[in-house]
Length: 427
Image (cartoon, rainbow, N blue to C red; front, side, top):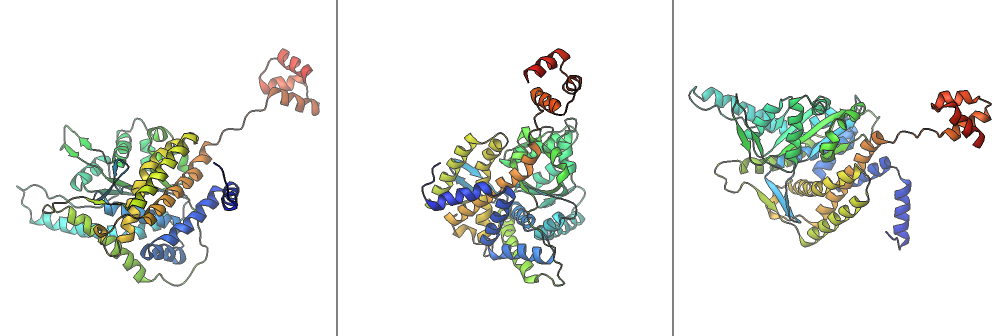
């Protein structure tokens, strides 16, 4: 690539001299500043009063939007039909407020699940033994077996959010080839990412089919468990490539006595409720239209085309691991476009009256690149090459300098005495 203007040259020089951590921090500031106020204020308020890292809140909010949207909205562009479901893993140490970020962001989902549970219990009380057991509506799954997750998703085909406080146990199962549950969980997420069908056939229990799966995932992971995450087939299978990692980028050590404005939380909850209302309405039997297509403006479609081609070009030159991840970025950009669109129109809930515009695509691209930098921060440190062992000639030179005998060189290197002697003379 040629740089013809002073600004382009300056930008590239800054890029070359800035660490991935600094790049991610700068990008995070830009992203948060570009969000609708209902989301931006919740992130800033949680950081100020509860000292929750802003990047943790961002990913937890995107998970909440992704789960609330499900299959209700889709985008058809560049020959592919894509939906909103995404997978997030928050990386940090104990006490980094990973759980608090998830709790704050997903509170509107918990509220609706509480209502669904109460309604289900009432239905059970009113049903007779001869009737079929009423299905329970549910948004989030926690501490569930894979069989339970399949069943919940079957009863709630629009989407199901898998929320796990500490994802390590699930990762360990996935990495164990002898764990039937682990393999099934990994297949569930691999198939679900592109919304494929899931057919469950069992001898002893009910068999069923999810014609179009749509799981989402949010979990926390401690730094020391990252090697487990990328081991035993998780990397090779492509499960890692589908993850949007969130390492800790920001911190606040100032403790305040005040409280976050309740209006901020109410405005956020109202926006999420607008999304859920659309989803719940689409699930009703009398609703003829189950899914709504998000249309793109011409300039938005052109920008998406240009960026995807750019990703393909960069992928060709990329190193292994990054190359595979960039392949999935060509899918995640569509998913992020949907989430950004939903986010910007959730205040009024007038989703069908708007098109995905250029500004939406630009923010989705920035998010996609932000998570690529995060991926590099989290993964590349665990794939650093082992330092090369020193050559025998270098050892001999060092031995001579320190007046060590040839026998010591033979013992250290494992070479026989005649080889060491010959090299000794040559050195």
